[in-house]
Image (cartoon, rainbow, N blue to C red):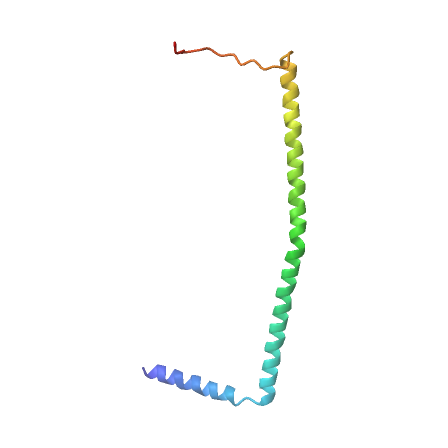
Length: 105
């Protein structure tokens, strides 16, 4: 309990010293705080504008990749169709199988 009272007294002493600071120190502290707030605001604004500028760029890159993927898929499908047409001369596919069970009606 005694150490708390002593610590509290030290804090009060420090607080009084800070309150007794001259008007020049207070003005300087307010100016520094204002400059930091303005700098933070402009940094935030810069990040916001930068993100708005980068969104169309990323969207364009995504669309370009998807277009390339679709072209590759179409080419693969065409190659598959050509191979299937070459394997069967009539161009029709025949599925071979065996009937295991058939219901008689």
